[in-house]
Image (cartoon, rainbow, N blue to C red; front, side, top):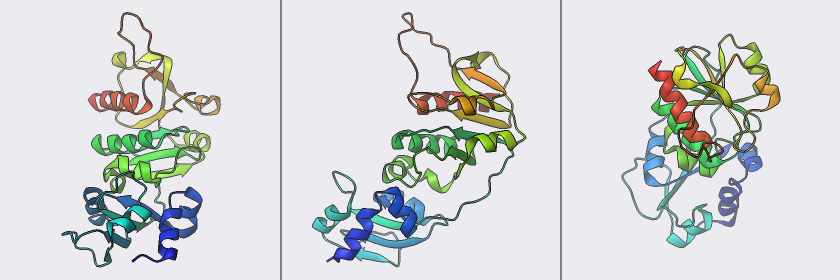
Amino acid sequence: MLSKSQIKLITSLKQKKYRLQHGFFVVEGIKTIKELLQSKLMLQALYTTETFNIDAKDEILISQTDLKRISFLTTPNKALAVFKIPKPKSINTNGLIVALDAVRDPGNLGTIIRLCDWFGIKDLVCSQETVDCFNPKVIQATMGSITRVNISYVDLVDFLNEVELPVFGAFMEGETVYKKQLPNSGILVMGNEANGISKQVEATMDEKVSIPRFGDLQATESLNVATATAILLSEFRRG
């Protein structure tokens, strides 16, 4: 049986302020937990409804009822782990970096982290207004990629002004990305789902790029930010 204090601690980690207070975050699902166990992240506790070949010293067998009490999912996924939030690492300003200006949706951030992993982007830089990367929904969407991408939260305007790399922003009115010769090193900035890149961040741009619409009606207002990131990163990698 889980104690009331254990249940209270784990369920509190759904909120950012308690993740910061306790220094822990929650991961659910066997596949993602295994990926994180193979990384340098430190496991605090692992709760499972049956014994799995996970090779974790802190595995605690609990009932399905208890798992439902601590799970953030509608249908709990047999295992839940609590990991320690790692200490921030310095940003490597060599190569291609993705920067996010107030991306709010956890699913979008999780997908962008996976895209960074896929395209070999080592550093993802986020504004302070961007959703927390240790949000349970973000962790779920990364499918383990969070262990292979260095995510930093910064004052984005200051960072872009200080870094000695060309800064590319994704804009509807930018130059079509299909006609550009893109560098191997630089920063690709993606904006907020509803408002795009803010005026303050826009002022730091060296170039504006866009993904042209090919539909006859031209009725779609914009692409989902994660979808647009995938297309633009593909073009940067293609050169």
